[in-house]
Image (cartoon, rainbow, N blue to C red; front, top):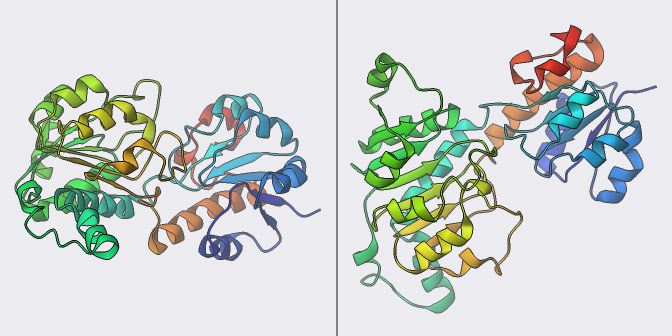
Length: 329
């Protein structure tokens, strides 16, 4: 009997091609287009793979033969790790492989938000309005600004590196503080979250979504920010209280926001933040480049192939529930 890998989410044609290329040729791989496909194959799948939607307790319970779960990306907040661990199922992710892609998207949102790029384009393309004069009073340069990075993992470090070209004054907060020597070498300084939101021109979020970080940026934190400041979020939507952000942006308390992620995805034009002219929204595409997809697929299927055909884990450091791995460490 062939091993079966079940891709639980709809993926792009490129990712489907890469998956077929990297998975062991002896493996049957099924790409789900809807819940019906998942229901048909879930009980006989040896490996579950998720990209965006995650894997609930219900799906894990139905996956009677599942022995391994792989996330195409880093965030595992929407995978029921507790249920997987009860079954002894290792859950692996691919950390840091899309860091450059997300970092570039982050800096792009900073620039586009400061210059009201989408508003300027839309005014011309949809309304035949030429906002050359109107937008000047509300536009700012990114160069030499004070940037606050909340979270300083792989992506935060890449953002800091890119911003060095703009000669920005970069500060950070992370639960794992660097040494003073490391901070000096990187040309950054450490501050608390409150110090960052009070002093910085740009706040950029790069933390995982946990109970401790949910609504980390709330009404209180937004009220502490400078009126000229902007907020950029390319990590997880739940980090920001969207209703509080809406009020801050609508009232002019903040200059703008660039958002790639939202509490409930996908969103559409009915979402409260899409109607504001000082907000730029993108559909969770920060990590979505050809280079990032190639790297993620290569790592993910290396893990899967090693598990299925060697009885080992390809990269133990990417197993988020190592207590479930047992003798495969």
